[in-house]
Structure formats: C-alpha cells, structure tokens
Length: 416
Image 1 (tube, rainbow, N blue to C red):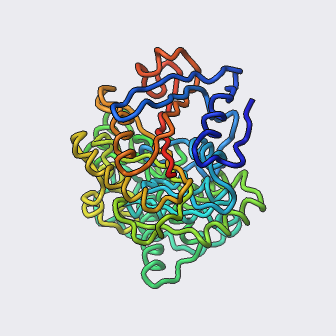
Image 2: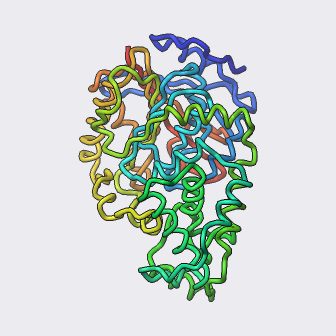
Image 3: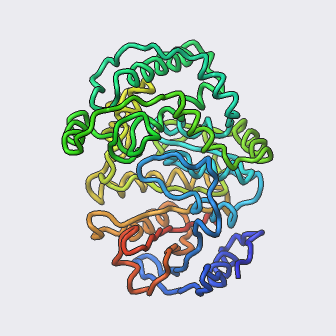
C-alpha cells in the first residue's frame, strides 16, 4: 500500500523505504535491483508509481508543448519530498508542468527556461479567468485584421488569418503599452496553443500535432497529399471553447491556491547554468527534464508561436542547449548541476528525468549520475515508472508508447 512520506528523512532512508513498500495499481511490488555506475553502486526501483488513473491531472495542464512529461510525474515527487510552502523549481520549465503542479499543491514556484514562450504558456494559468470574462473580452477585440506579414495561406483561411492578425496586433499593443491584464494574457496563452493542430479545435487546417509547427513548404505538401484547403475557423469561438476545457475542473478553492502561488511565483528566462535571481540554499525540490541532445528542434517547432507572440525565433534558438554530442551535453549539464547544488537547500532533492536517445543507444542516466555526484549531490537511486508493468528484462529495450508501455526514468539526488 502507499504510505505517504510526510517527513522526508535527510539521509534518504525514508525515501528508500517508501519506494520499496509501494504497491502498484495492480498490486505489483516494487522490483529493486542495483546499478553499478563507476563512481557508485545505486538502487533502481521499478514499478508503476503514477498513472492517470491514480492521480487525474488537472484540466489546466492540457497545453501542448514538445518534449514535456506528464503532470503525474512532478506531482509524485512534490507530494513525496516537499511540504506546503516549500520551494519547487524547474530549470527547463517548458510548458510549466512542474510549476502548475507545485502551485496546485500549495508550494512556492520558481520556473526558468531559455525560451520566453515558457512563461507565456505557464504564468497565465495561475490566474484563470471565468469563461464569462473571456467571452466579454473577446467581444471587445476587433476581428478585422490585415493579412499577415508572412505567407500563412497554407495554414489558414483568409478570414481566419485576418482574425489572427487582429488578435496579435491587439495583444502586442497591450503588452507594449503595459495595459495587458490577466484576461489578456490568458487569451494570448490559449491562442498561442491553438495556432496549429490536427483537429477542428485549432485555427489551422489539418497539420502536425500542436506541439510542432511544420514549415510553409511542408504544410503545402500536407495539403496536396490530403487534398485539403484551409477552411474558415472562428478563432474567438475556439479560444472560448478551449478556455472552458482548461478550467473545467478547477474549483474555487484551487483558484485561490493558484492565485496565491502565482502572486509569489518567479519566472526567469535564461540559461539554467547561471540563475543569480535564485538565492542559495533555498530550493527544496527540483523536478525537471532537460533538453536531450539534438532530438527536439525548438526553433522549427515554435516558429509560428514566436511570430504570433512577437518573439525572435532565431535569437531564442541560439540560447537553447542543442548539444549534438554526449560530451557537449555533459559539459552543459555539469554546469547546470553545479548551479542546482548552489540553490538546493540542505536536505533538498533533485528529480532529473532522462531518456534514451539516438535509437536507444544512449542512456542519459548513465551520464547524469557522475555529473550530480561531481557537483556534490548524493545519488539516492534511479526510479523507473513503468505503465503496463512488465518484466525487468524488457525495461531497457522498449520505447515510450511501444506495445502499450510507457516508461520514465528519473535519477534522484539529495543534498546532505
């Protein structure tokens, strides 16, 4: 049975006991073995520690972003290793999954990302407006824009494009003159998320899933192959529909908790290797998933979002870590771990989610452990969350969502 870890031991013994005693949803016991990693002999815990059935994610988390983990992952560690009021941090915040979960759990929030889109997608969800507020604001926003200053005809019907341009002009104007409020920022966040996708809930004709935006030429090929022409989409109607979906299960109590967390939340845009805005020895828990070598093309995926939000996609892409070699990736992450050690409180933890890359030939956890140890952390072990529980021998030979199986590997460090 699950035994809540209400008082984490500073030597990690309570964590070890909890993981060993954990019983999965089908009653399976945790498999514990040992991993030899040059510098240390580490325990590895394998079970289905979180599933959507056990802990239903908040509707507020339904924002698409490339290479993001499920909300149940940070919630597991937040509940396990922190108390109300503790500081929770994510140095590679992405869509803000860790930040939102921390806010919902009454923790203090710090989020950082090299891409300013991260803050645009995360911060407004701490102050969710009502559907009535959004409808009233949309009614006051003009729809009579011009055509875009770049060719978007392969994505949008001309009238849809004019609505998008009008909304963009309104939002950028409010941002420039400093009059944007929580409702404006919410509408901007939702619209940014609705720009392209593969259903009629998006502004565009059918294209790739909404965490990616293909190039104009690629979209032309998709249109030709599917014999499709962009049809009119009512952008205001779709923003309101998505708003209702995002806030569908947010209670008044959760709104109050999020508002309090958001009022004190700190969002940084910069390099995770140097975060002078975070005071030393103050973070109780870091939960993060870093960029994995060059497998995610952030500029190519986000060029349209950057245009809509008035951001320089080229400049942003140069600030995002895209190491093509393991040695280069290690050099960057080693510096990140040294910074994490500086800001982590004594007795605090780091949960570092990693994955297989290069067709499963590179297991980044094998490279992460020495980096954390060299920075001064103690490695508490490797946690493998595996849905559709299977034999240990299968764990290293499967990919996410293959054969109905989904895994996460998290290296857990502590600062003594």
